[in-house]
Amino acid sequence: SGKALEDGWYHSGDLGKKDEDGFIYVVDRLKDMIISGGENIYPAELEMIIGRHPSVAEAAVVGAPDSTWGEIPVAYVVKKPGADLTAEDILDICRNNLAKYKCIKEVRLVDALPRNAVGKILKKELRKLSL
Image 1 (cartoon, rainbow, N blue to C red):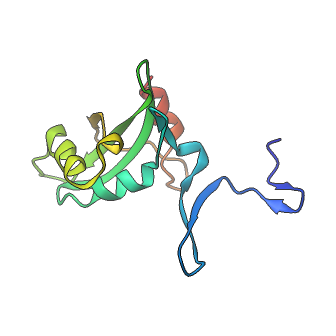
Image 2 (image 1 turned 180 degrees about the vertical axis):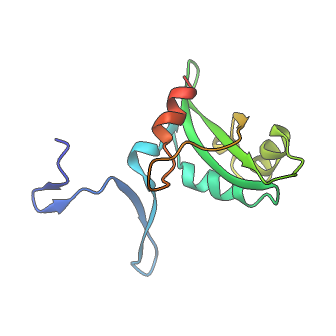
């Protein structure tokens, strides 16, 4: 119904996992999850992997429509000043650290990521660019 509070439960829109000790960890936002070929892909995981590359300043991953898979993960990447970074570098770090179905399918190197007034990355704007 779109309500945050429903039947005594607070629906935050966050996705989490529970470990063997009962601790709960937020892994991503439900609206950001990508479903590709029936598999759930969490952009936060891909962003963390991409962010490990020493030439990456920041990255954001969104789903783009795809006629075969439903959606594919697309990375928007800002490189560090003076860094020599290519789309292939990003694809390589994904191939070496992620299951094949989670790997980025397209990389777009950008000068900056769109942000709101408080600095939050506007993934909605990136999704529009991915259409």
